[in-house]
Length: 314
Ligand SMILES: [Fe+2]
Image (cartoon, rainbow, N blue to C red; front, side, top):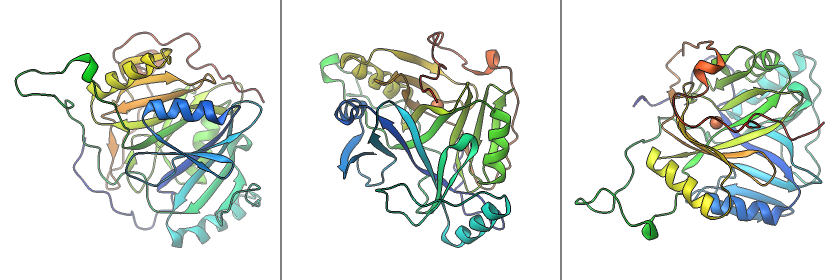
């Protein structure tokens, strides 16, 4: 963890944030129930459902209705004066610019990215953090007792989104694409099985994670909370609401965060994450390549067998 405040890195072209992700799901009201229970604010916006965190009007997720769960697009945010440079870069790479999807008002740059994933680079405020998140032991009810009765367990409300993990058949190619086109940097990887990338203007250890699969898809969205205690509280609340499948409580090696993944109604996950490593803009992170069996988690239960199974079909 670091108390260094990130400032824009001069002379480096890179997106500063993952502004939002968008997935199609078969039932928006079921999605609203799930993410409300998870501790997010869900808001109907036209024909889509926005995912926000309490106290902020930023939409981290935009869900649209479709026949099946499917990654719809990823929208990255950049500084205003970098947008023409990104346009030039896309043109240099021969990447064709597209109109925004029907129904979406946007003056960002739209294109088919790696694996054909619909991708946007837009101008927006930096939503990735400028400092490492506050991480502590979690709240306690009274100074005399460490905790409170189960019936008084508080709800957990994520403070912001941390990252999104997507599937790709070609992790190495995806690292190259997101580094070259979007200016992200590799944080750590496990061979060609999984990789984590951060933003050069300061972000969590990963703004985006890449998971090997036969085709592209959405694996999970991850939400920052303040303690391992809250990770447990959130997981317990979700189990009580019928969402008892998932993986956790555990601690990752790459990123160092405490986690609990709650399986959503479509076979992907929403992760409670606490204490993730932070990469300030002043630091050139020294990445590692660690065998997956040594790096997936430091402790915790074994993941479900289908944890990395991609339920999205092309
Ligand atoms: Fe994650």
